[in-house]
Image (cartoon, rainbow, N blue to C red; front, side):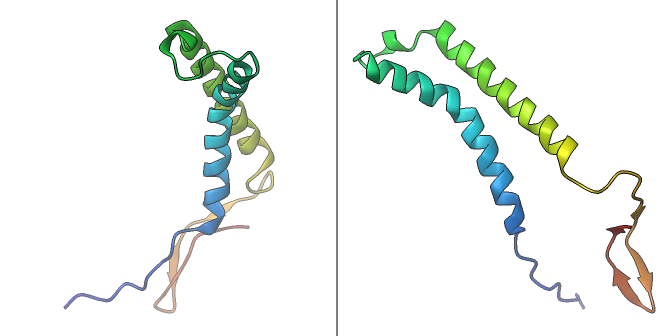
Length: 100
């Protein structure tokens, strides 16, 4: 007989970092799109999006994302010198892992 596992909804605190990374990735493309719009260029014409420009925008987007990952890792998380206590069983009940 299988034990029922309680439903564990997705962590709502993860959606903000995901949207932040998506926004950072799309920012260089949006800036270039606005530049084309202001200069009255044909926005959807392939000549307005040469491969070199798209590759440059992609490199900038990846650099922005890498920088944000580094900042997130540096300025968030647990305090310095804290220790992780792994999940364990106490009195027959599972105690989740935590940082002390």
